[in-house]
Picture 1: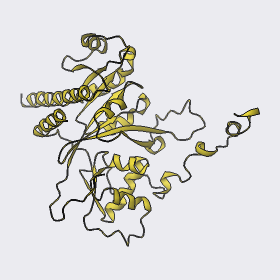
Picture 2: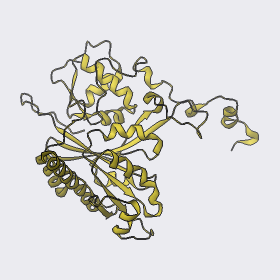
Picture 3: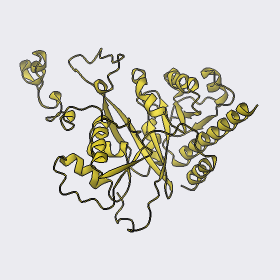
Amino acid sequence: MKPGRPERGTPPVDPVTLKILVAGGFGAGKTTLVGAVSEIRPLRTEEFLTEAGRPVDDLRGVEGKSTTTVAMDFGRITLRENLVLYLFGTPGQDRFWFLWDELATGALGAVVLADTRRLEDCFAAVDYFERRSIPFVVGVNCFDGAARYPARTVRQALDLDPAVPVVLCDARERESVKEVLVEVVGHAMAQAADRRRAATV
Amino acid sequence: MNPEGQGPAQGQENGHWFDDDAGPVVRPYAMTRGRTSHAGQHRLDLIALVLAEPDVDDAGAESLSPEHMEIVALCRDTPQSVAELAAGLDLPIGVVRVLIGDLVDEGLVHVSRPVPAAELVDESILRDVINGLRAL
């Protein structure tokens, strides 16, 4: 919270807020990525599955619990006065897909963080964003000790559309994460331009 | 640590929950008096901003809980997103949405862009986002 209150009498302009999603398998580095650029320590929000009340609520493995919570980590970047970008780490488990719908609505775009040791963990996320035409880039998180693969190999393994950018990154490094996010916004602009072109033809 | 199976582990086998296993002492939706949605209120977007009305007098709102007042206090100086308020109050998003709905009814706060924009964001704003990110 910032100290001091705004001057009385100046007509307040409502800030514009935008969101970018960060998806990927469990342990792919989503919260690390959010923390690398967020101006606040990543915050956690929770929702009860029973509150969402969807039929897919599969509680196998957590018997003895009548409700379970799902957490989302998020961070905030103030880009300029009245322009704020939020980064949301999507819940890692596939069975919480219905929460993604809420997160994905109105999202500017997404980062799918891939860990080359467990590339299959991000199939679900790639699939999800492709189907909904949400612009996304694949960030290959270069973990220490993980074998480095060229972006081309990852692209083939994930069977990505040629337009989808694949970037090698380090989720711990602010500069690296900034680059990934710039890529997301650039890709979102390109996709929007393509759509406009398609609409006028 | 737990000789002869005494203590919480055995308690759970009997179907009893102790301490944290039993969940919060006050169930979160008790704060909303059991309501899980708010009449007339859209499902607020996670990044919808909540702003306290500038000249509100928070005395007199007798039907409001401490949690309601905490929300008003949190967004008095700086607008707060629904997600931030939920994290700040350590309450589930569903609960916070209901509480915000109450505050809107009372005229204590207003919500900016409650539902996500259906159309694409303006290109000039996207350019600002890129420039802003580069300048971080």
